[in-house]
Image (cartoon, rainbow, N blue to C red; front, side):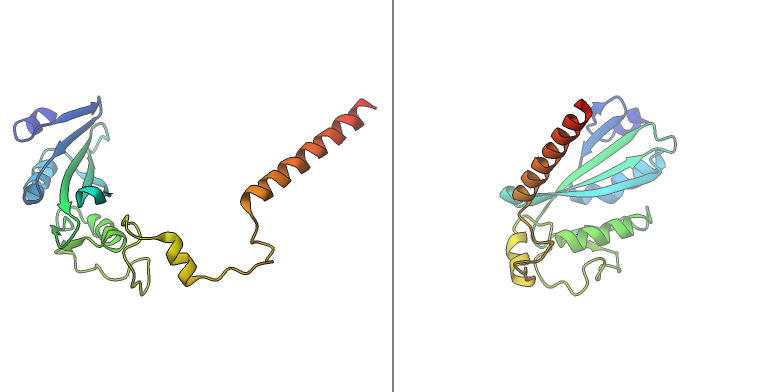
Length: 180
């Protein structure tokens, strides 16, 4: 199986059961067709890494065989702005949900996937939240109010220190009572 891949792609062995190939975006559908016809029957995951400094997203497709004995990572880079990716849902139906997630969290357009509307974030109008330029703290401060004096609004470090001191005191008391 890996030997067949080596006839078309530069295959990098990451470990005895994990291999990786890098491709260009225009090779995606041909590569995936080739993988499926060569025993990689399951698309396990699609993930994304945001390389904001290089102005790219690295898309990573993880495939496995029916025996789950070989895993293959297919990686390619796309521009962070205005690049569209072909959907894999016609080849691997489970890609539909994964692509919806990546669309919502990173803003990536998947051509051929007509379900790219709201998925988990209803009526979201801000920068996709997993893009590195998204400021989580600013978003929280602008959209949520925190009330002083609430029982659940505690300083984490101070509360941890208090609980440790309390546990230590209780242990000391138990040790004293065991010694009597």
